[in-house]
Amino acid sequence: MHLHKYEKVWLIFGILSLIVFLSIVGVTAFAHGHTPAGGMDVIDPEKVDETAPFNEPGVKQIDKDTYEVVIVAQAFGYNPAKISVPVGKEIIFTSTSKDVVHSFTIEETKVNMMVVPGRITHKSYTFDKPGNYLVICNEYCGTGHHFMQTEIEVYE
Ligand code: CUA
Figure 1 (cartoon, rainbow, N blue to C red):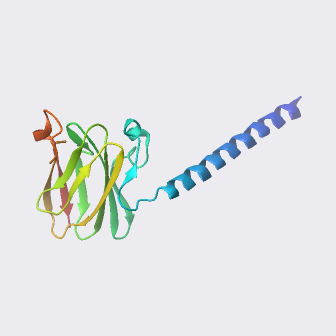
Figure 2: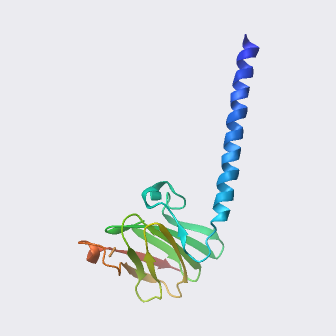
């Protein structure tokens, strides 16, 4: 009786492990097939909240000299609402939109990203002086367009 029960448990455990393993392999292979190249990756705009890296918007340190900022644009704002990054490091902005075309335009810099639903846009930038930088939306996106903005704090 007991043995039978444990056998069953182990069998289920084994099958589940196999499924998990295959999913990881599958997802990894899929992700590698879609490695950012020209900043024209695709994404389902209906599933932004579930799709990595957009399921966790914010600043991530990639290595000693590189940070990634994941941004989701939506009428009429950006997630995360507040961004802090260090000066003198490479910042890779990765963004997409959940609805219509927006932009992620950092004033006083050359960063002017088109943020398009269904696409993932990348832009690398290194701030050479600390301070607060205003981010605005340059693409008309509706009644709240003029209020669509956020701020980047660049710290020493
Ligand atoms: Cu978003 Cu204009």
